[in-house]
Length: 186
Image (cartoon, rainbow, N blue to C red):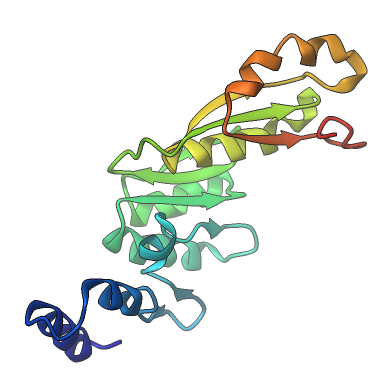
């Protein structure tokens, strides 16, 4: 959808020719920004309540910097997963308010904190599962969810899990990170 069509759509809504719900549906499929090496979907936040998350691994430093710079002009909150300290240094040069969480391996920008998207328990079987769990927990917090981290409660010591059952039951969603055997989720 180009500017002229968007303007016409808004005028049609204003004049009562197009219902608001129909216009909203049209806006959900607006185009993307083409950077040649990446296609940035600026309207994902309209469809999914949060902009697209950037997977950093495998991207060239200049590509990451450009992607973050372009997205940061349109959005208040951004997340880049599987990031390194070197990625952070490069992206911070283009987007000074980006932050880095080394435990979660995340780059993020949070200009307008979100809240009210429910309560999630992030549960790990063992200590080695923590980096993946932290990635999930920090992403959820930036996206507006309240998280409860319940770590190292694998079924090999089931008493550790049962001790946390009340907290787990208060969650609306449970994310389980269960390493090698995956038994905790069952």
